Length: 300
Image (cartoon, rainbow, N blue to C red):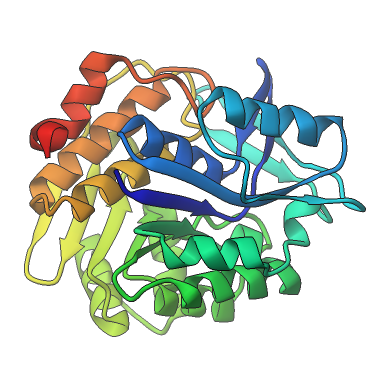
């Protein structure tokens, strides 16, 4: 069992079907826990009913709340999620919330020292205070820790400097097709294809992997010496909220286990596809699907 940390925002997704636990780091940690690891959320909530409910939900899911800070003068984060006819989400993200005011602290310093993998993004670094805390956490991790950046670009909450720094802090970067074509020219690249764009970004920043999600068309994973594509799994989509976070959790599991790129791509697509078949970001994983995702690592 490894310690796998989701670092950044935690919130309630206010979906048409009701309130669901949300925030990419929390979703990632939950799915890492479902794959057998110690999934940890490092975030913040307000001292309010929504914050108490959110930490209670973490406890129900088997996630420790030890590293979820309570910020007295900020509300717990919320996001209004609207779905189109295909189940794809659009987000309205409330500002000035608890996870915008996360301080660097002694508990996080202790956690960083024993972290095996950590996933971070750009959204929780939209405020200077939380940006400093997150980047200090990453810098405090052991060099062996796997730092995964899920860019998760949202609205106006990013710029070139933040994106560039994200690539510099990571060993693995996960992004979708839209993000790829946004950040490549932003970072001075003029690629002719998805493959050449991913390769150029991997080489420029010395990354170990670039993971490109392609929606229903699967994914492309580019490593230092090889690449692997997977066509994805056809499913009936309820909504795609959290599918990318599940994908990233499977990438973390298999990369830490030393799985080949083709197996990483297959497993990550399988977990992401399952999550898309259920409402919300944190559905319980049936044992049969879990076994499929774990593959040869189930006894490893």
